[in-house]
Amino acid sequence: MTIRLDIVTAEQLVFSDDVDIVVAPGIDGELAVLPRHAPLMTMLQPGELRLRKGGEETLMAITGGFLEVRPDRVTVLADAAERAEDIDAARAEEAKRRAEERLSGKVSEADAARAEAALRRSLLRLRVAEKRRRRRSEL
Image (cartoon, rainbow, N blue to C red; front, top):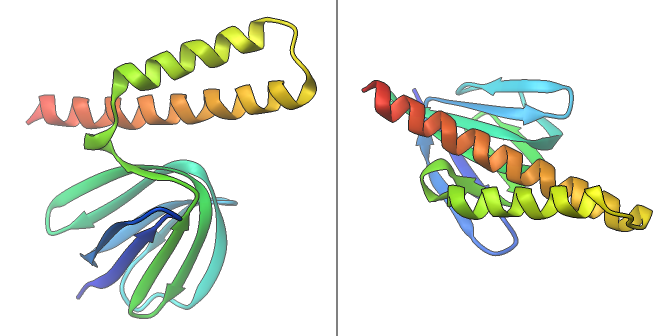
């Protein structure tokens, strides 16, 4: 038995397929969704979204949004979502460096908040890319 998963951002449909399980970073902790799960709606925090189809697990970095669960369908409305294999680690490392640089100087409260958010996003992207790299090297 499977459940339909749609992951959507403002720009595109990132993923749409039937999966066995979805594990999402809910606002109160990780949330695992299986087929015929009770309906619910919750906010997502930035984090790693995992889905499994067959024996294959896919990792994604999402930067928050909403999760709607119905018995036969899960919809993720994400601020941003990126598959682990699509993450450019060098670009994420550069974004991390820039954010740290901005935070080390004198900046306004608003600029500091933006730099902290950019730092969290880059660290998330690097963590997801590293997990994928480690899993591939174990095979």
